[in-house]
Length: 220
Image (cartoon, rainbow, N blue to C red; front, side):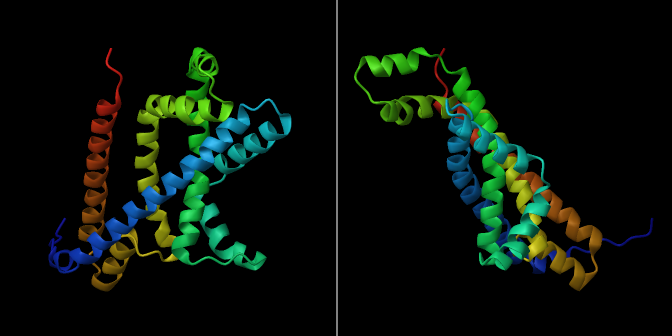
């Protein structure tokens, strides 16, 4: 192989790559925050005593989990405006990623809720709490702490999925890497650096989330 590596074009455009990385982190954080709310509602729906709620929640989770995320992104950005729902590209991507995250988090939360001891609810009733306060003050906080490792893994996967935002021209890291590649024809250097940025970012995110898990862990 006779290939001369030249990373000058990467160093000249590092601000663009940093900007794209920052936007990717923003998209992932906002999407998982909204996804947590959606997933929590879907989890309670799947565990509801009402058949219609179980059917709606289960149908949503099944439909989203079995649809490729790229198809969802393209549908929301190109098809929804035909129905009168027009969103800009960043809002459209956040909406899609939130819906996608919610379907996966619903299963995480459902498992976490089912694993909780029934004594938690009974203890709440014994001290006079309403069902709503039992859920918000006892059930949900304990469940979140128990599922934090799975939640962390989902966040890392969601951050990597933000690379698909480039499909609708959202200026994330992948979008700028592709732009640099097209303008400079430095294919190996561009995608090598972009890949390493994703790897390092994921390791740092994982490290921070593990520290959070340790701080919130219940002493045994």
